[in-house]
Each structure stands twice: as structure tokens, then as C-alpha cells.
Length: 228
Length: 228
DNA sequence: CAGTGGTCTAGACCACTGA
DNA sequence: CAGTGGTCTAGACCACTGT
Image 1 (cartoon, protein in one colour):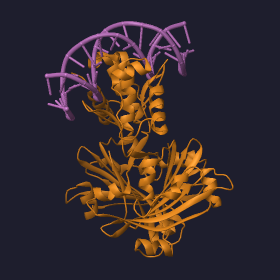
Image 2 (cartoon, rainbow over the protein chains, first blue to last red; image 1 turned 180 degrees about the vertical axis):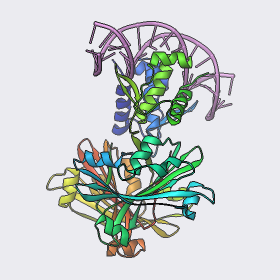
Image 3 (tube, rainbow over the protein chains, first blue to last red; image 1 turned 135 degrees about the vertical axis):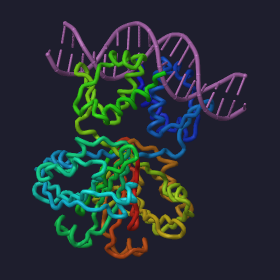
Image 4 (cartoon, each protein chain N blue to C red; image 1 turned 90 degrees about the vertical axis):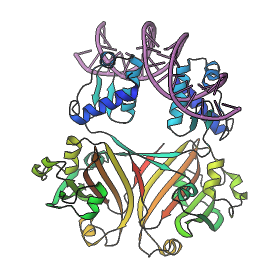
């Protein structure tokens, strides 16, 4: 019995072993049904998935080729902080640092495409693993889009968690970078001023309306890892 | 005509609008064929893809549910440095810094599961964008697995590029982090000592054999971004 | 054990695109 | 314009798993 997984595995094997060179042309789907003794839909699924994964390149009439430079993609899971901490076997803790309503600063308006008069809720909080700082969250919420946010009891539930449960989103932009810890960040994260922090930045929209922007700071040594 | 994309879009819309609550149960595939007026395979494809994307959760007999905490995944493309630079509209440059053969240090042997006597080629080079440092590459290549590496003209082609064209791989681990620039890194990347560098680390195996390990350092301000 | 998803088949029509 | 992939249909059998 030849399943679509078998076909994928066989093609990957052929690429690895050199039988299929980068840029090389594969047989047509119809020809492959005879090679593998299965229906065309099965071959189509195998090739289609390999194409999605960036291994193959498919064009009508031109056929299916092995990508010359395999489009490597790294997929990272972005779980809730709480679950991430618990997954590590640590005790999760949460502390609200500050919460204030203010006019949205220019950079935020630019980033989320907000109106000039936009008002935002700024929340800063700390996520702990075994009582040690794990992640510092600095969030801005567009109150025009999410008026309920103003009434949430943020002492008990983190904005992260509330938003995930509440908010639909249509578009997300995630950005990773490194930054030197300022005086404040180093205090809160219990590290040296000037230390290298790993920063995850996320902006979220719903139907063209900017909803929220958050910067998540991790203390030195933090790693985001994926394997495939 | 109802295609699988239409079905996906409609389900996402229902989740966003609240018609389908997190944890909520969807109708069975068979029931949905009547809702959308299409074959079961079409519904199956739509639900299957949403499941792969982490929006839905499917179990036999139990049915299909909306994930309570949407398993958000961020996909980042990891292209060849040269292409990445050219994509930005900059002129790509490359400079070989050093190249030496040495016994593999302990951390490398541990990381790649190498034998005690393993010998490695260490290559350090700099990738430039418009003559300014863009990425510092510090690579170790396991010569037992890739003996050809010793004979490559690394003045002309970067190890990155050579490996992509030459090397099949079965397993990759990518790790992102932030690190303070040491004296050497800051010199080469034209930034201050102690500046926060964004680091991409990648280890590659082929059939249980460690092939190469590389650390890619980016100067302050560098961002890795994705949108979906 | 019965209901649900997971996969496959054989056939069909269409859209795109290279020759 | 002809060949290729992209998608759909109607039907089938199976594997898993909750009841």
C-alpha cells in the first residue's frame, strides 16, 4: 500500500541521495501514479505538500522541479506565556506593574495605522517562572477597537491571556530582535543594565483596525528553538 | 461554486464573529457537505488545513473543535544571506576572515554528537550589504562527514552557499537568541562592544551524523519579521 | 460498538502557461 | 493549442476512540 506519506518520503530520499538533482524535473503526476501504483490524487497530495513546504516548485505545463535553493522555513510555536512556563516544568507567576490610559504616541499610531486622536491602554506586567523573571510585557491596546479592555481585572488575568480568549484577529506581524536592557528593564528582569535582551514584538489588526501592540522582553540566555 | 478556500474563510469568519466559540464543536464533515453543498473531500481539505494551521483540533469520534488557545505559529523564511541582502536592494559583499582545521571543541562535539577525535573546519566570514557589515558567520564543519569541504575555494564562495548547494540534510535545529558583542564581534560588525546582537544558530544533521554548526551574528537594529 | 475523521480511488473539468 | 497542475465529486474502506 502506497500512501501519500510514502511518496513524500521517497521523493525526499531521492533528493538527498542525489537521484533528483536541485533544479531537476520530476515525472508528471500521471507518470508517478504508475511508478507508485496509486491514484493521481494521492500523488497530487504528496507533491502539493512538498511544494507548500518549499522543497518542490510546481508550475502548470512546466512541471514539477526540485527547488534550487530550498526555501528553508523555520516554524516557531508562539504559545501563551503561562503554558510556555508550565511546559518547562516551572511554576508560573504573574505580576501587574502598571496600567494607564493615555493618548497613543506617534510611533504606535504609525505602527498600527491609528487616528491622530487615538487613546490607548498601556499595560506593563511581568511573567515569572519559579519566582524568577521570565518575560517582561509592555503592551498597548487601542481602546477604540477594544473598549472592554478598560474594565478588565488585570490583577488576576494577564492581558495576553484575556486578549487571546477575547480577540479575533485577521492580521499579525511578528518581529524578533535584540536590544540592550535599559535601567528599568534590567531592574525588572534582574539582569545587568546593558545586557542583551531578546525581544518579540507583535502587532495585531482586525479588518484594518489596529488592535494591540506588544513588546515581550526576555532576560539574557533566553532561546527560541525549533527543530525539523 | 464552493471551494475549500471559501469554506476555510467562512469558518475563520465564524470564529472571529463569535458564532463559533473557542472550544466549540463544529458539525461533522458529512453535515458540512450539506451546509456548503459540496463533496466530503472538499470539507475534509478545508478542516484538515485549518487543523494543520492550529486553528482547529480534530479527533476521531470526538469531532472537530475550535482550539481554545489558538496554537499560533510564526513561519520565518530563512533564505541565503546573499539573496536576503539583494532582496533589500543592497549590493552584496563577502569577505573571508579565517579558515582553520582543528580538533572539534567539546561544546561542538556535544552539540552535534561527534566522536571524541572529531576534526572540524572552522570558517569565519563576513557578509556585507552596501559595504557595511550585515552578518558575521562563524561556522564549524565536521570534516568526517564532509571531507570535500577542506578543498573548497572559500575566497570566492561563502560556506553558506556551498553547503546549500552540496549538502543534503535530514534534521535541522534553529535557535534564536540575543548576545552582547565581544571585542571581536564589535570590531567586525562596526558596533560598540557590549551592543546587543541578534544571533541565529543552526545545527544540521544527516542521518544521525552532525554536519555543521553555524552562528550568525547580526548588528544592533536587525529584525527578523513575518506577517500573516 | 458505533460514530467520526483519515485516506484512497477513478474519473472529471478547468486554468494556466510554455512551446 | 496542448500539456500540466489545481480542484472537485461520489463513493469506499479503515483506524481510532469515546460511550
